[in-house]
Length: 460
Image (tube, rainbow, N blue to C red; front, side):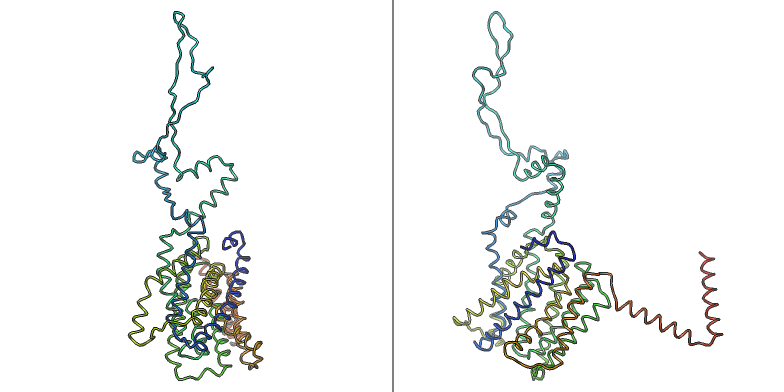
């Protein structure tokens, strides 16, 4: 499914990415309701355990090694292009014969009447004949290089298509590289999710939303330092749009009555740390893997779940004995909610979210998350017939406006309308200031400009 975007243009990829991110937002709004049901209705307020279960469930993707043949072939494939080039270029250390299989001797069947090896010469009436061995030696080219033998027999156009596909596959990260990336990504992903759920547990939803909305600012800065694509270029317009988005989140959160709680400082720090970790792992992913063709997203997430299961279990003992989160085994109903939430929001939605990140840009994917809060409020208005203030609608409009403006700015990479407007305004102010001077001062100013121009022309 993720290979569908391979043949799309840049504009089509961007449109598909926006659609995918919007679908993931809807899924995560549903997941948020389920998470609140686990924490409140089921009275299971264990952020670490919840995050651990959801992340470990990524390992379900590793069953792809049993069901998906290309993954198994990548594990068994040991092709070394340098070895092949050295062998066929005549290197004395590697002869072409080393790439041939063991000899197999098979009998040769000759025609009983005419074998083609008899001689017509006769000597003293006795017939002489010459025969070769009745056994022939057969050596098969190794499967490791059979692909090149097949490609050498293709037509020119077919060879170009096959070579393009082979280069695309060879550009992919190896399984070892995917595992290394998963180890780093697991810690950033896990602690970002854990800090967010911890903030939800001890702080009001409005404060959490406001603080996590700053991840757009951190993503913009980190992506400018380590760009993963041309769309990550820093511009004044993107900075302005991010600030508008943060302002919209503030207005939406202020429209509710959940902005004044005693636990605001601690929860705000947890939410802010979650936003920073989110920006780090998203920019790291785009910087290390700039295209979805370089890595199988389900395989990567499967290794993330495996790494989490193997390395992060000591956290249960640390939190339990420090009384930060006393371990309690969930009952059947709570397990059912946890597994459903993990399948929907983690196993299914996370792979599509990563795909949407690769199709668009880091900043677009980040601002897509800010749409969750107004979407959730809109769902509450529709289901419970609630009345929202004007502040909510203004803030929601600002959030949606920021998201779609960033999409257009990503499409036109060199377009910075805010910077152009600022330059024009500055030019108009300077020109107006010159025109407001007395005529003699304006003449002296023009003389100095003409003199400077003549001097520059002479020196050139």
